[in-house]
Image 1: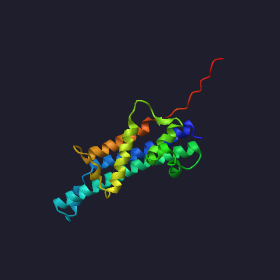
Image 2: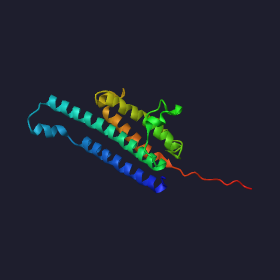
Image 3: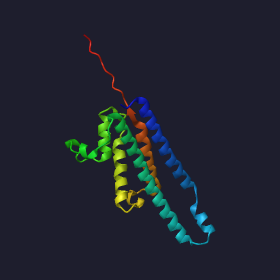
Image 4: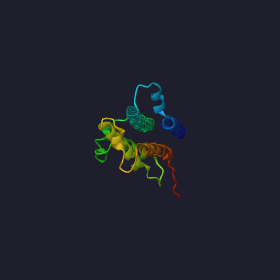
Length: 185
């Protein structure tokens, strides 16, 4: 059975992993890779620009997948500790209500039935679903981060949105132990 302390411990672990990616992102924003490449005089300006863009695209793509993996693994661990069994999406998809849902949506629904859900008033479930759809599109679009960048935004804005959505989801997921009310006699 999942205890409040177990929940907090797992939540803190997810926080640290997300923070690690956030720090890597900040370091990449501050680092000027082109100056390092110029030192070697192997590439011209156009090649340096292309290499820098390609590397940033791959980093953003891998961070997106890693952020989704952190949330998936966290929810899986919560599920396994709550139900004392492994998550079996194939078995759960036999439930009519779950047939058209993704694994992340099934995990969220199963955990919600055990009082583990995003606190009321935050619309983060829908945003997280969008992040996972973006991740899936990324994977099926030859691992190109550019494939998930929305119109009127850029790669930095898209990654910042993904990072913020994951951070907010982790922050707002709560474990509420139900209060039993005793009827007056």
